[in-house]
Image 1 (cartoon, rainbow, N blue to C red):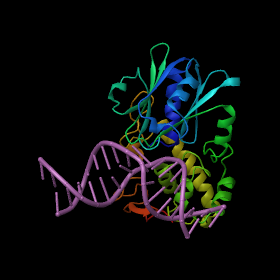
Image 2 (cartoon, helix red, strand yellow):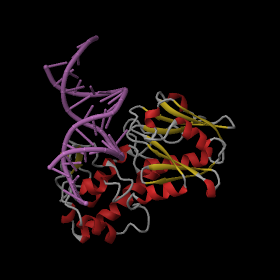
Image 3 (cartoon, rainbow, N blue to C red):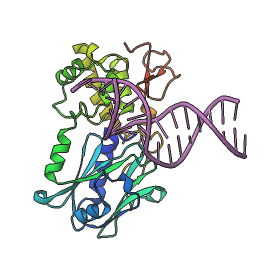
Image 4 (tube, helix red, strand yellow):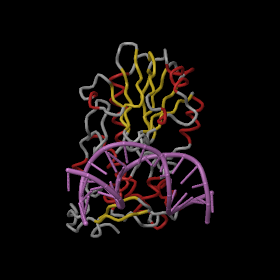
Length: 277
DNA sequence: AACGCGCCCTGTCCGC
DNA sequence: TGCGGACAGGGCGCGT
């Protein structure tokens, strides 16, 4: 669920709904969602009195900037598998059943972090710390710097299955299992192919397919299989548009062959044996 | 040192 | 109806 398109949708929603508000306090109900070394007291002290100045995204992370840029605190939210970030005024906020952290604003609004499985992580940085951390993440697939040549350079250097390379956040940031499989489907490449076996032309097709599927998913406000919700607590609309992920046994929309599910390094992969090589 | 594996945790579904 | 096992979108630490 929460991959690049979902994080992007949430960031846009929160920018519109709660940007500009000032934090009155932070209540931590499940401290295991805080990064190691981040205490509830440190989180509260770092954000209290600061205003939410900007909401962005890096990879799958929603990035909330608080306070003036020369002395900012940066809250970085990785949603894990089941994390949600929902404004409390949202119509469906009452449906949240596993709120782990509540960020209260001075005007009575709040931002809720809800996470059934608690695989999500919240971390707090200053500008320098976040600069170092964000540099460890790989290329942004929707940036101009993500080109066929750059992707081909990455694939040539790796023996791992191409599906796994796409999941490596240090190489390409923001792609998870759903969109990795969808991009490979669109590009006509099997998930188990060794990354280094991709031709220049295949890398170019994969580059285009990845950008296209991520853009399409953002337009549809993300994929909800079960848990994902946007910043207003609503489900995304891309699930019916998935062509390969989760569709084993169904007919390939392109060639009519039967979509297969295989396990690649302990995680499901889906492909069409008829039109993926 | 790139890569695969096991684990973190809860909920749901499926087969018996 | 109950129960055990498999499985789920992610990421980290570890061993090789």
